[in-house]
Image (cartoon, rainbow, N blue to C red):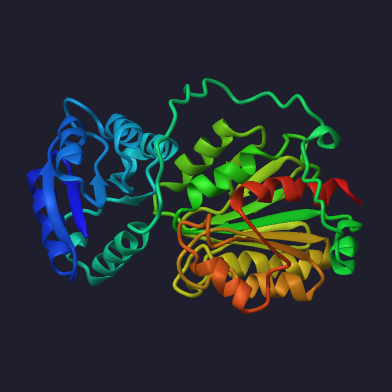
Length: 357
């Protein structure tokens, strides 16, 4: 795999080049110190993958990503500091496949960083990317004009099975969502296509770098008709509201209250999708809907099975539209998926589940 490193710091480029050199099959195709150079080198060198800094002179990483995705698309990993959070999420909007926090110089030498950095590149390099149309920046929160009963829904041509018909007659009271690698854009697509009048609360666990969680909640809030915020202490979620787990705490539910839990990692994850899903299943039983999206690993599989076994309904993203199929596949293999759907169909199906009882 031929990789282009883009960063205005020669030291950072040198360290990243060294790290990449420890992985068999990784070749550094070139190095760029500005976004402008990155655009030009992408045309000439035709790399398979780009590691992109955000804050650079001449042309920043956001503009470079936008031009690359319009000109000659290639998987791009945003590799930036926590201070560049908001701009990094805008780069996801323009077509970058994921983002990762740039560690300090001491952390660069840690084995944990080596493993996660190289694994993420290996997995994301296989993601298909396409040219991105120019989309005007969203200047204000969209106004929700449609009621839940007016929202577009799937009209399936096939006859529903008896089990699906039963699910669609239920009254649900809570939606939980889990995602990891490739998740920010997938979660955004789901939430963007739900009406602001969604009749109950939504709890979300996204595996995310420390320091990027507040920007993530802000980014989603600005892009959707729902009210999105980061969870703090004890919370009661209102209808049309999305509660996001912070990057270093589990989000759990007891009764109708969501709380933060500073317990150990589960499957090396904190926050854990399993922890949220299992606690929600214990509280809501068959009144719960769970959605598991793209991500590496197995987090969420046990949680989906718990929801399913208590009579709830689970929607799992399919392989074709997942950036990384690890988490969805694990849930399917464990028998925890009520239905497997392409990403674009998930919000439509959610609305149908909610309004068809």
